[in-house]
Length: 218
Image (cartoon, rainbow, N blue to C red; front, side):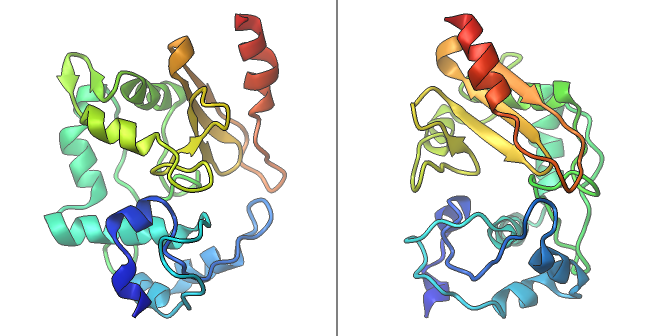
């Protein structure tokens, strides 16, 4: 019953309602259990839905994976294929193929560094610049401005479409596992990338921006 309430927007806003228990730092037992599964879609469908979809926010890998599976089912292409055809060449990003699950559906988890997407700080900055410029870069409209606006608007608990929206309205940020961060500040025409060592003690380093960089701009 609840599964029929899950839409693409549900997955973009992390409100599927699936049970998920995140572990501290990089210790995430449910993620590791999912990785050991031979059929990730089946493993996710076996998870209980504990909240009515579209009503409760919880950041979890299930929604990211299901979004990838939907894209592949609808287009016949993986997320990597689409990005490599329609975005990476125009933005100037050179990225190796993403890792695949046993059922061949691409796994694109921006919260995980090792074994997934390996982008340099410059590449991350290009992605941030694409959003800062309302989806346009190098004289090409790569993403529609309407989608950029929708994605960077808070829909539930200061969360957009895979972006955390700053409470003061100053911008938005992508927070990766282990201290990898991408911040966009439209009012300052600024993109900031932070990269840190991926370790169990890793943490977010946003205060570097709020307490140092932003104060220096005042």
